[in-house]
Structure formats: C-alpha cells, structure tokens
Amino acid sequence: MRTAVARTFCAPADSANRTCGKAFTPNGPQAARSGEHRVVGVGKILLDNGFDALVRALRLIPAAEFVIIGEAERGDQQSDREARRLRGLAERLGVADRLRVHAHATDAEIPELLRSADVVACTPTYEPSGVVALEAMACGVPVVACAVGPLPDIVVHEVTGFLVDRQDPRDLAASVNHLLRDSFLRRRLGAAGRDGAAARYSWDRVAADTARRLYEPSMSAWACERTAAS
Image (cartoon, rainbow, N blue to C red; front, side, top):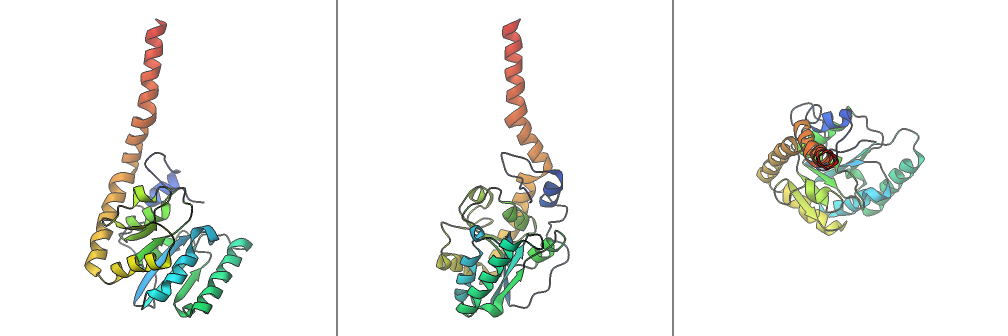
C-alpha cells in the first residue's frame, strides 16, 4: 500500500520518489482512451473509496468515460466483489459502456492512466494519506476531491482543483462538468497542481519540514536539559 508525502509526515523512499517527480510527471506516455473526456479514480476497489458516487454521477456527465484504476493484488476477493457491484450498478444506470475498471493496475500503468485523464476524482469517505491527489497533481491533472482527511490541505479549491463537501453525485458532476467544459481552466489548475506538488512535497521540502517540526524542538529541549543539569 502506498503512503503519501503530506505536510506533517514523510513517506517511504520509493513512494515519495514517485510522488515527487520521478514517475509522476506531466511528460510521458499516456494510456489510450475511447471517450471524448476521461475521469479517473485510483485506489483499492472498496466501498469506502466512493467509486459508486462517480458511477452515479456519470449519468450527469455527458460524453465522458470513468476509469477506475484498482490497486488490489490479483485474487483479492473483496475488491473483485466490489468491482462486480460497480459494473452491475453501471448496467442499471445505463452507463456501463462508459465505465472502465482496471482492477489490478500495476505501478507502471498508473502514471500513464493518470496522464490520460482530464480530471482525477478522489471521493473517499475516509482518506488517511491523499497520495492519489498528489500523484494526479504531479502529473498536471486537476483534481475533484471530497473534503476529508488531508485532501483539503492538498487540493486548493479553485487553484489546483475543486473540493466538494460530500459524496453527492450531483455536486461531483457539477464540479467535473465545470472542468470538462473549460480546457483552459483544466490546464491552469493542472499547472498550478504540478507546481504545488513540486514545491510542497519534494524531498527537500519534506526534509526541511521534518527538521523544523521534529529535530529542532528536540535539540532545543536537549540543550535546555543540559544547561539545567550543569
């Protein structure tokens, strides 16, 4: 499971290198797409990740396909059941022809799929890391996100994407449609997201924040203790 680089903590080296610019960049191969527009969601295919809200919103987003990039290992029965449920929901709503589910995407495939997106949607009920939003921003793609966990800190509303208060299909569709109708806005927000991801979540910034938040106070406390003891 991947871990994000957020303001107050640091990720493992492999994860942070990807997020901070090694694999996740605007330049590079893109996955093929069939729709006029593409909305992408990434994560384990579980109910808490809110992919069903986007499937429901798809009825209100014309001429767009929704691609779910799953992170489950093959044979993950829980994720496979949820993928089947989402496909069944899409069938009932009449949008099955515009739903694509990559249930077991590899790390190498994820950047290509992200770069192929017009919008990346992050719609969980619970979000501990925000890594998907960071990776999308690093690829220069605007984000529509539910305002949970660290996402309000990572996604700056109307600067790098849009924040919505809840998993409401109408709210999600309104924000996604706003972006899909305006290619200039998508480019502007995508560029701002890329700059923000590079400036706030690079290893240099993470190291400086870690030193400021953890090591400097510890060293000051140690120095005070030594002074008191002497």
